[in-house]
Length: 334
Image (cartoon, rainbow, N blue to C red; front, side, top):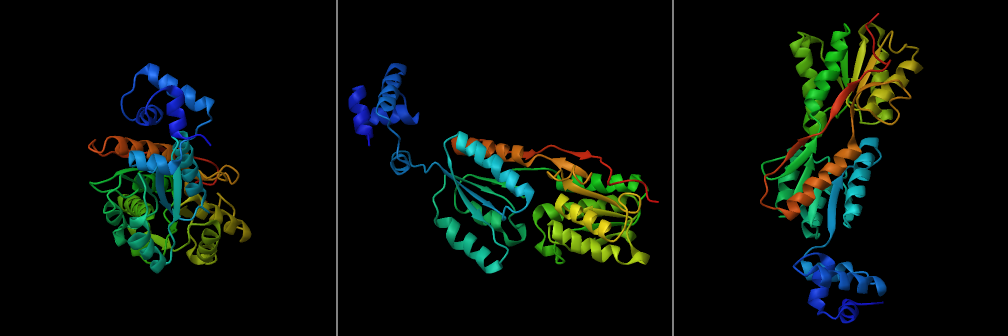
């Protein structure tokens, strides 16, 4: 296997010059850079990541912290992050954020501070546990999804606005009995995004004078979770809502399935709306607030690499695109 010394000897330069030419860090003339890169190609030289780290002080690794990727949104988001990082020759070190409080505490208190990353992308962290502040203490450039502070850049849709628009869509159709489905029963355990979506739902009801009709059902943010919660709501004929707003499309699709199992027609007897524009949303004709998680992943990497290259640059909070996508799961109440 060829070494940097072999490349330097073939190009007729010092090892330091060869290293600068291949890493792009430090000045070398165009002619010298060409000789070094030609020599590296001829010798099939590949820089060892450990050696590069020692020479540059960088690991070429980004730590990504996110919930388990069983949910479509997180899987798409991770795909976008990985695509951009790999295109920049960065490695990705993925840490799933567990729900278990003790394991989660150990991850933020002991594991992450000891790992070497050039930067961190954090998804699905809990502001109530001061997780974002604890990541700041690692001293690494940081980009978060959803919650942000004066010390980090962030990218996300406006969750409160998205929920308000979804709820207003149902109100404009004439619905007054609109249930919000999603999130744990304890509001303190809601993720940042889900808490903002619940806030947007209440804002829309309040503006329409419907606050007394607010109804919130706890559900895991999954299709089975939405199915179970919706089945409980819809099983009571006398108090059945005429519309359900799911905290995400998985929950909303679960609600559609529950309605069909109970013989309740969607949308003539029940309207359902979600958030995400999941890959299955079109199959279920689901009205939703569409967003583009893969593109958000690309944007997060752009923000992070900019912070790594320009640590004194102003922080950025990027509002990702989202829009109401009307399909046939919503209609005026019968």
